[in-house]
Image (cartoon, rainbow over all chains, first blue to last red; front, side, top):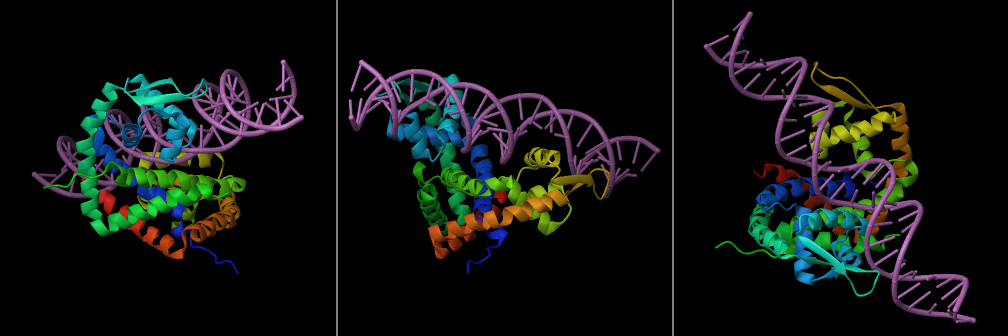
Length: 145
Length: 145
DNA sequence: ATTACATCAGTGTATCTACACTTAAGATGT
DNA sequence: ACATCTTAAGTGTAGATACACTGATGTAAT
């Protein structure tokens, strides 16, 4: 017989609650850079991957493609990323502009402070195992249904 | 000397990515109930706490108060929650209506399927330790700054 | 009583999120 | 060549999130 779960143990709720609270912390640290935590993550990915298609970038960020499209519009308008032609006439490649690279440079030490603060708060062990669990989730969730 | 962190190990990014992906799973399961994962979590809290102030509810959900206000507007318009006078003339108490309770009843087995699916996917051990870590995060994050 | 402070809730604005649907272009089979 | 399928991206719509600010009510200090 399938066990009845306790709604307080909902993985979705607990993930989203932690997400909300932690995002507020990182956003506060990142404020002087002008980047949100979402934009910072996007810029980090772009910096590591180089010019990349929207679909590929969305996959890499575990983000719905159309969500990324909207998020890109903001930073494109600010001149922080450029979107040019891709491999073929369908796809378009996203790249960091010089201004985008500069914003990332400025954000990095701020992010580092937030990150160090989180590691200290949770302790390195808890922090590490949390990260491991979250990566497992991110890998497993898309296989559901 | 403070260690330089690796941006790929960002707690915020990994939390939000997992959050996005898992929310999609739960929302797909909850679809026939008409409730989103956020609304489901709200209804579970209301069901457990009984009529509760907006500020208290927000605290309990680890959600910004003004966010909850907007979320409440939707379900209030649908007649699923009622918002009446609270302890004093400032506060207002939120309660589940009969229609709200019915929606929760309908959603519960759907949620249970999603939850069981997640437990199976991660394995009970990983699932349990993830939950523990997330609760630690939710408790610790608000103490930062 | 009056002033000062704290608490509770709502609004303006902006970002983040994703489903359903559409359009355009490449790939495949006959 | 054509029809079909697949892939890449954008739009309409709607919900989720939170900061800064406002207004109203309660509480405390003098």
